[in-house]
Length: 153
Image (tube, rainbow, N blue to C red):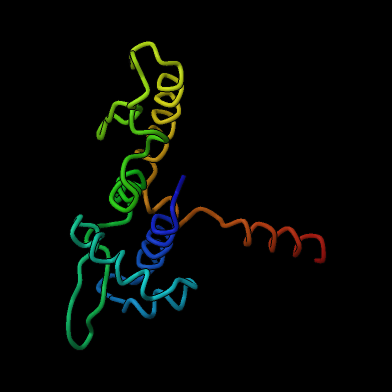
């Protein structure tokens, strides 16, 4: 499950992806535009910067921006940076495997097998999806608004 940290981080990255080249934004601006508590973003942005997804600039004209083009930022990577492994349970994780204390044989465990399939399916989608796709994808609100306009007009 995507945590609030993951959701807010993705929303903030989408916001920053919409900036003009060379433009930066302060945490408070991103928070206000996306209805995210600033204190929450104050903890998220350093993690994204340390992972090489953001760059920060101090002083006049300072703020945050993407460190690379949105087409190069994979959604799976962002979620792993903020929320950890994609696996619904630790024993299904390929990167952070942890045996369950109550499992006598992980190789024959049906729960682990099924959750590994779930994890692999999620990873195959999230690791190929880019931030650019998030930016250009029509939002549900826009689709509903367009449908309303078609009916009225």
